[in-house]
Image (cartoon, rainbow, N blue to C red):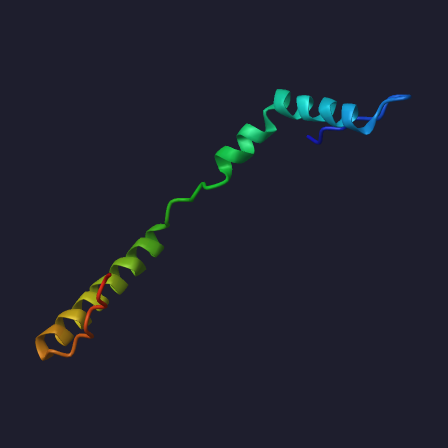
Length: 78
């Protein structure tokens, strides 16, 4: 539902803008938009399975490189 404010006769732009802002706050559209802003949907079972497979493969590869002594040197932190 869009919020519409029409300019009254002899009304300044700023007062019209203030009325619009009050209506937006009263309608709670901003609260809903802010709550949905960072919402992440749950991964599907297929995504979970593929992620687990990928993680297992990477772990296997890491262990193999560790055993051979070919792991890259960790970066030094300051």
